[in-house]
Structure formats: structure tokens, C-alpha cells
Image 1 (cartoon, rainbow, N blue to C red):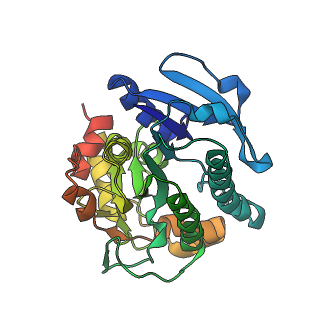
Image 2: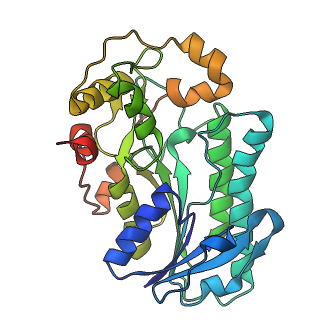
Length: 303
């Protein structure tokens, strides 16, 4: 098996590559930086530039599966120009991949698995969302994910399965939201955001990486929520993190009004939440290693 990965040097991509190497799965990867290109038997880099519609067609050689993780981070201030970047980076990457596949014999590629996000689900304190729910666009993130998933669906024109993994809050000590949350908690100045009641549908980085490979190897089709079985509130996540770190949380919650002034529209990342079901991926036979947030946190910061 040889898998082509976009975004292979990012947080999730690096975790997927590590598991591939452990399981003797060869990796081709696309990068926008020529300095990051390596050429080994089981790890080969190829240049692309989605903004200029450039892609090295050699990246598809020997590939049996594609995992797409490309897209600009959403954890950067949402100016109007950066909002456009968040959307276009996802759409352009998919279009360049699609055009590249049209120019080759893609018959050996059996599966296409792309990242998506649970941001497509509206903010709710009571609803339990699953993949079959009919959704209306509700804010910037849902607008982005809706357009993203429509573009992913264009790969159904090829003779390969197409799966979308709606990623929740990724827990990792190597990047993402968790290390930023840990910093103030270590110094006894961490606190929940807004009401603290908003749901956090989280997933351990290792389980998420395994879901992508599981979907690839089993040629899954359709939408799958990439979250653990037990979502927690923001308040619970902060308090459990403090316990693992051996500290405590005693400051009042950060008011929503303050976050909206400081972060603008981006405050939705901290104030909105969705409680999301993972029953569909479980029904396919996937086995989570981290179902409890305490165990997940302990794997990074436990003594």
C-alpha cells in the first residue's frame, strides 16, 4: 500500500505518517516547500502549488489511496482577507488534485479520504448530531465546511470510494489547541470560556490518525465524525486538565463579551460547541484507544 498525503507535515499529517511508517505503509506527500522534499523508498515528497494550479503528477505513481488534509489553519485571526484564505486554500487544493487525477490513469487508486470538520454542525447545548442530520448554514465555519464537502464530492466522478472525516477538537501535546490551553492552567490562571457549558467533541491525535488510515484501508464511503465517544463541556475539559497537571482553576470564566471584543468572529471557536456522535465509525468496526478525556489527557501530561 502506498498513500498520497496532502498536509503530511502538519499536526494530523505527521501523526498519520508516523503510523504509516510503523505499519510499513509507504507514503508520497505533497508540499508547497521545495525544502521539505525528501526522497526515500517509503517516504517521497513532491512539489505542488494549489494557488497556481501546479502539481507534480509523479506524486500519484504507485498510490492506492489519497488522504487530503490541505487547508489553512483556522486558528489565526479572521480578517476578511484571511477568511477568504481559509476557504480558498481548501477548495483550490481539491481542485488541483482533481485536475491532476484527470491527467493520469487513476484506476489503481481505490480510496479518497478527506478532512472535514464538525464546524458544519450548528452551535447547540442540547442536540446530539450525527452524520445524517440535515443542516443549514449557520455562521462562517459551517459555510466553509459546506463548500469544502461539496468540492470533496467531485471525486466521486472517479472509480474510487470517497470518505469525509469531520474532525472535532484534536488533543495533542505537539500542537493545536491543547498546549495553548495548558499554558495558563499550569500557572493557575486558566479558566473556562463564556458559560463553560459549550460542548467539546474531542479526539486524541492518535485515534484521529488511525481513523484516516482505517477509512483508507477499508475503502469507506460517506461522512464520518472524527470524535471520541464522550464529549465534555469546556468547563469539564479545563477542570480535568488542571487535575492532570496538579493545579486548580479558581478564576471566574472569561466573559463571552470580552472574547468577542478581542477575537471578533473568531470567538466562535471558543464559545460555540457541538455534541457529536461517533456511532457510525464505531459501526464500521473502528476501535478507539482513547474514549475518556481523562485517559487522553493523561497520555500527554500524566506522571
